Amino acid sequence: MKRQRPRTCVGCREESPRREMVRIARKPDGDVVIDPSG
Image (cartoon, rainbow, N blue to C red):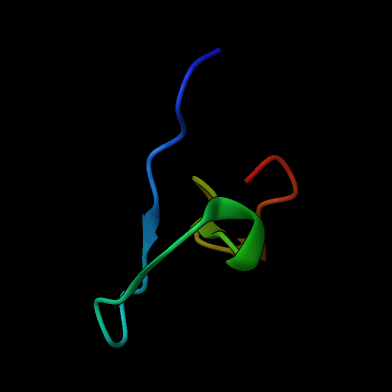
């Protein structure tokens, strides 16, 4: 089983497990969206 690395908050730089964080992405057209595959 592959170990998942923690995600880092861009605001406070705190690391947390992926399931506790929300990933926000910018699409090529410039729109900002929540990434459901996160």
